[in-house]
Length: 65
Image (cartoon, rainbow, N blue to C red; front, side, top):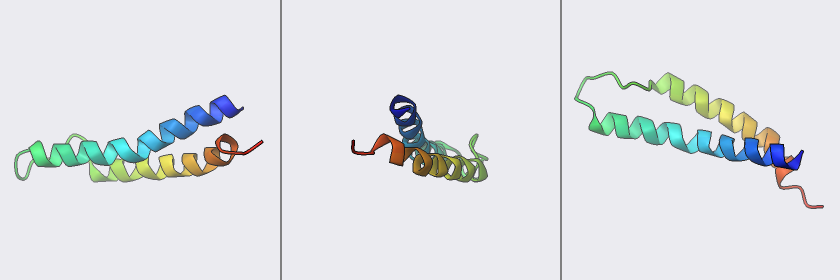
């Protein structure tokens, strides 16, 4: 159980860090007025799901025995 919670927790942390970084890089590197490949709505949705997953997994992962 702890190994699964650790995996979910680490993926959730990545899900809160990677999408905004990718969106920022696309926004900076793209042409003015161009639509980025990763839309802001997708970034917000991924971050929301990752946040919920983190709060669900963290208590099992960081529980002191």
